[in-house]
Image (cartoon, rainbow, N blue to C red; front, side, top):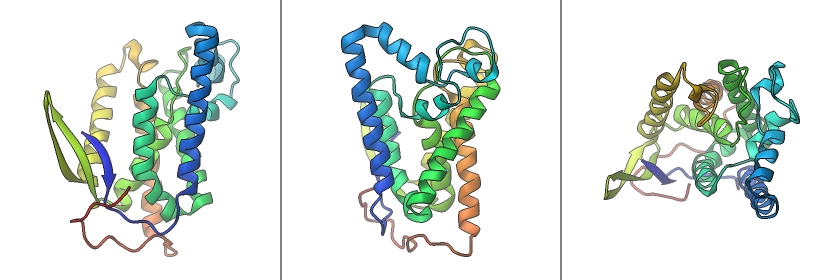
Length: 242
């Protein structure tokens, strides 16, 4: 199930969301230049230096040349391949603009980076001795998804549903789409628990940690007397740009 756009209008231009996407794309372009000049070995060195390596933060053996705590931030802007960055940026664009509209530009940036920090902590907690670099914005984006689930559960999201060779476009409530996404992360994490996948591959526990953090912030924002968000969506029949 791939989301394409939502029917949830905003009042503010999502300058921070656009800036984050632009920065991730610029960093990915740099990765491509590194791969072109130094090959896969050069790209691996880049990921080892600026990706999140749990052992570098916990003092474990085998983690050399890493930037340490700086890598918690830098890892959020690195991506492994076009599909990795493509799907991450799609999710950030669809759901990030509404959260930025609700929290404000500065508040959203702090929330996004904080969500990434919580996601990184969750991954390090699960695999503290891992020397496999964790890269990608998905932990921070998971926080965005968690907040969106709480703040806009009934917003309709135009999604591509595929069953083998069959495809269909349907409008799915955000609570169903994002709830399903989170359930898949939890199920996959428990399947991978105790195996080498817990410390490498897809950073499932980063997704879970970021999502839970986003839900918590969403609950606080929903209960806040100041509010500050856009007017409630009154109709879910039309589909607007997400």
